[in-house]
Structure formats: structure tokens, C-alpha cells
Length: 181
Image 1 (cartoon, rainbow, N blue to C red):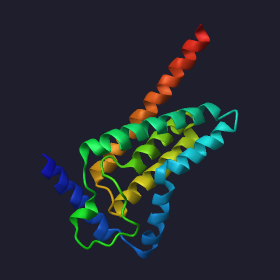
Image 2: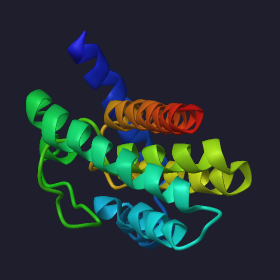
Image 3: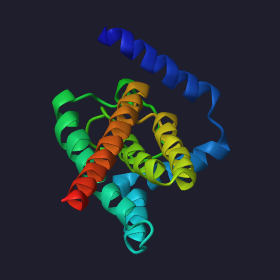
Image 4: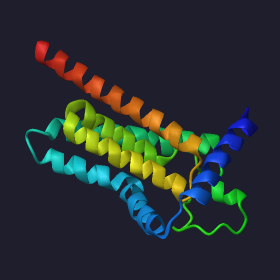
């Protein structure tokens, strides 16, 4: 089963690498991927939300869910799975960014991006739609740059969406319980 997943992963990555690379995207994708470094874009957005009454609760949920997704994805699952990154398997492959440290599964950029954008989407549909598009671009950039397998990104997307939904739901339940007592 694992060799089947690797076969599909490499087929997708090699298609992206051979068919979609252009000088324009070679310059753009490193910029897009930097937006997701350490979840900093989403942390900045959450802090801005904290400064406004209308979005304060969203900011609190975002920061909480980002902390949980980092703990689960980066601190627990990545070391547990210990999956090498795809460029390790292609000797001499020239990355467009410095080689990321750490393991590959799940994609940290993707899990944080989809955690935060899911929270935004659940609370504010219009800006949440934009946030989800940005999350998708960041996730795709990880494939384009050959630093994650598609299954890493898919795993990060699923985990991020679930954590965003669960944190939003838990916060809603907590606030409903505290207002009913």
C-alpha cells in the first residue's frame, strides 16, 4: 500500500515539475510558500482580528486552533511518521528554496493554512473564501517546490479543516454553555 501511495505521489509531483514550471511561477511560488512559514501570515491575521471587536472571537479561535494544529502536526505526527521529503529521493534536484528541515508528513504549511482559513470561513464566509484560496495556493506551492508529497498536503488539509471545525465548534459550545448558566 505504501509503495502505491509513493507511486501516485511521485507521478503527481513529476507532472507538476515537468508540465507546470515556468520562470514566472518559479519566482512566485517561493513568495507564496513564505506566506505559510511558521503560520506567520495566519498569526498576523489573528492578531489583527484580536484588535477589532467584530473579529476578536475569530482571532482567539484562530490562535487556539493554530497552537493545537502545530502541536498535533509538527510535534506529534511528523516525528512519529518520520517521512522524508520528496527531494531527498531525487539526487541532484535543484530546489528553488532552501531545503526545509524536519519531516514531510503532514505539511505544516498546509495544516496551519487550512486550520486558520477554515476558522475564518466558518465565521465570516466572504473573507473566509479568500482565506481558503490563499491556503490552497500555499498548499500547492509546497508541491510545486518539491518539498512535500501530495499525500502530505492532503493529510495537512484534512487535519487542518478538522481542527478548524472542532475548535470553532468547541468555542461555540463553551460560549453557549457559559451564557446559559
